[in-house]
Image (cartoon, rainbow, N blue to C red; front, side, top):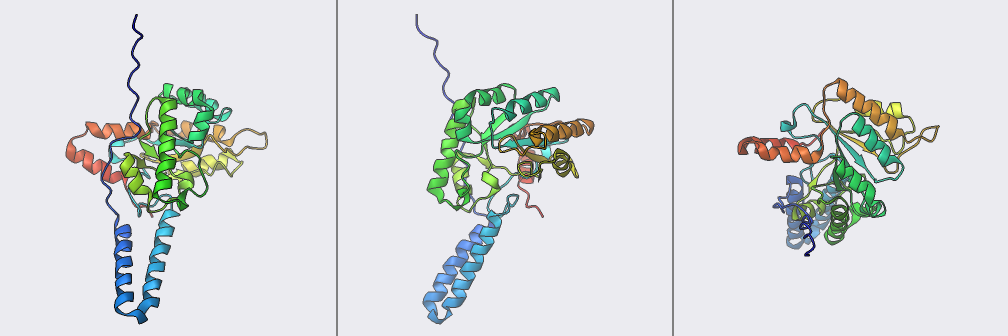
Length: 300
């Protein structure tokens, strides 16, 4: 008797998309070329050339240190317009064997779906939890393989290796390759967007975060997240590295329940980023193009 054939493995990444440098990146490249030409044509002007190049690097560094910026490439800071009266809850740094199952139970209680940006090495340690995340209808997305603090200081080859390792680990654990990437701490450099384009990944940050890895007061965390709560918001919490209150309870549990209750009362269903992306495919071409453009906002 022949064994039942296994289904083919999910691709490691989505379809590649063309990389188009933003005005800031293109301008920096042009400025470098102009500065080099000026230094050759008029050697006495080299201090001005070096100063201009240094200034451009300051701009690029500032853009990379601003997690919600779109200066280095497209960045989801809100759901696209076609998401309507929905919000997204994103949960980073897990899976955690103590916290994540409690978060999943809480989401079930409110019939809410969330996006879990998982660290590859944590998923490798706790694959059953990743399976549970996916089985309960939530999305598993890429938060790098190791969550290194120097992630944003790496070159393109190292970035690609780190992200691909995360893709492979999370695909194997959940059965589906991630479609979104969130940089550790939201920090990045100009090399990241070309890598994401080649891997078919979309960068996502957030509308607001609660700082629940540093704040031991769940009410304060929830207040930060709920201030100005509106349709299409992307909210950030953590199941990994969660701060704890005076009772030793992870603050994400109580903060998340406050957020879920407020979202229910405001009639703002919680969907995954993947669901928002997939629903764009059902729109007419012109509407889908406008919806995608609305996702890549440069925020104040």
